[in-house]
Image (tube, rainbow, N blue to C red; front, side, top):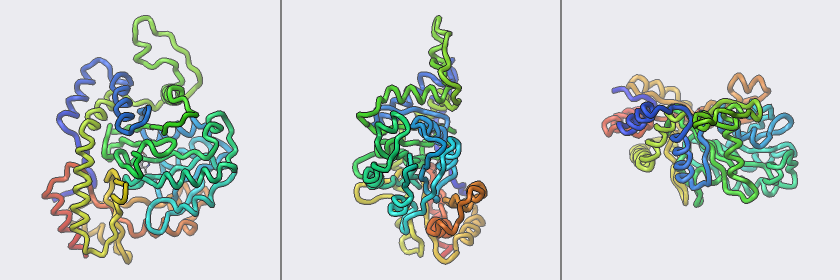
Length: 393
Ligand SMILES: Cc1ncc(COP(=O)(O)O)c(C=O)c1O
C-alpha cells in the first residue's frame, strides 16, 4: 500500500463550485473572493478578512501596512518554515530568532522577552501543527515593555506597543482560551496552500483583532491597494459600465486571490467543521494506538484549547528518527520533518545565525517525525499506518 504524506480533500461539490465560477464569465478577483472574505471573517469572528495569493503575501503586506522596514527588528522563532522569516527580510527589517521552549515547539517566553529591544516592532509567533500559541501571555509581555516601544507612524502609535502577527498557516479552526485563530493576535495570517487543511490550491488570508484605535475599513482598503498595484479600482469595478478610469496611488504589489481559487475556498469552508472533526478523530485514534510506544506525541487538545489538527508530529528518542523514516518508506509510507530550524539553512547561516545558539530547536528537529494525516485517509490506510509505525519499535 502507498500512503503519501498528503492528499488534498476535493469533493464533487468543490469541483462544481469552481466549474460554476469558470462558466460565470468572471474568474479573477470579484464576487467569489468577496464572499470568501465575508465567510472567513464570520468563521473567525472578526470584522473583516482579506484574501490574498498566499500566507507569505499576507504577512509581508501586514509588515508593510505597519510601516516596518529598515532599522526595525522583528522577532520570529528559529523553529519554523522560512516564510515566517523571509518576509521580514523582504521589507528590509532585521530578523531576530528565538529558541523554543523545552517542552514545546513554541518560542520560549523568557527568551522572547530578553530578545525585545527599543527597535522591536513586531513578533511573529507560529501556530505549529495547528496549535495556537499562548497569545495572551505574549500580549502581556509586550504590554509590560510598552515604554520601550518607539512608534514610527500613526498606526504604530495607535498600538503603542510591539505588534503581534500570528503565522497561522496551520491553525484555521483552532481555539485557545476562548479565542479562535484569527481573533487572538493583532493580525493573523492563514495559508490555503495545497497541503493545508483548507485549500484554494495556493492562497492565503489575513484577519485582525478588534481594536477601537483601528479603522477596519481603512485597513481593508489598504490591503486591497497593496495587493493590486495600488490601483484604486479592481478589475470588477473597472468592468462596470462607464467605469474604466482609475488612478494608481503608489507602485505597489500584485498578490490578489482569484475568484477561481475563492470558489474552491467557499466550498471547502462550507464543510470545514466536518473536515476538522475527521482530522481530530483520526488524531485521537493514532494517539490511542501509539500510547505504549516510546514516542512523544504533540498535544492537540488541552484545557480550553483545541488545535486544527494540521500535522501529526511525533518525537522519537535516541537518534532513531531517520531509521524510522527509511523503514516506513520501505512500506510505502511517506513522512516529513517539521522543521529544519532556520539557522541550519544556508540563507540564514549567511546572515550570521548559528545552530549552537538555538540548541532546543535543533534538539526538537533531530527527533521530530511527522506522519501522514489527511482527511480522506481511509480506515484501511489508517490501520496500515498504525501497524507499520508500531512495527518500527
Ligand atoms: C509555518 C508556515 N508559515 C508560512 C507558510 C507559507 O504559506 P504560503 O505557502 O501560503 O505562503 C507555510 C507553508 O507551508 C508554513 O508551513
